[in-house]
Image 1 (cartoon, helix red, strand yellow):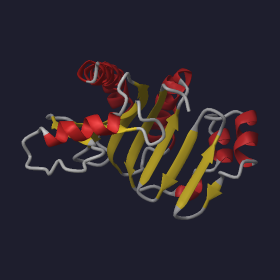
Image 2 (cartoon, one colour):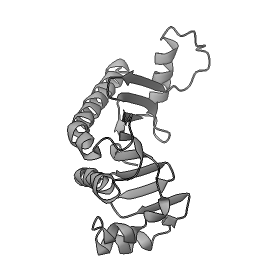
Image 3 (cartoon, rainbow, N blue to C red):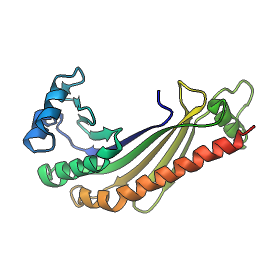
Length: 217
């Protein structure tokens, strides 16, 4: 497992029709090329059913349930593309989809200099004056939610399960739409995605530095 892994995802919540979301449909609307469709349709990860559709290309994963659509990638070069695909699907091709919310997810795996990230996070919680018992504490997980006028931001910090010195840091930015269909998803992406990504990267760096500094020596 790499010491540093990033995953970028966009989630759209609303009334979906999973049966539409087949690789061939994405080729028909010119969002995938022939090679990607061929690769997606001959992998064991292809699922197309009424409650769930999911497929993978070498660089993208798209999954759709009746109330949730997601596109994600671990390739930084595909980040702009997942934004473009999302905007095209919901603003141009399927504009009548009743969308209620959208979320930008940024997940990071980072190496630290700590010998035991799980134990460090447990100690953080024990010393947070929450009345938690500290005896035999071996691991901890921290989640913080912030609410703004137009969105909420959530950060989650937890130890990597396969490496005592690595940490998993997840950021979610969620935008609620009070009136279905009264928005342009592309506008939200253009206005907020870059800002939210920058914030998630900066906050991740600060968290890693704090762990390194606090566990030094």
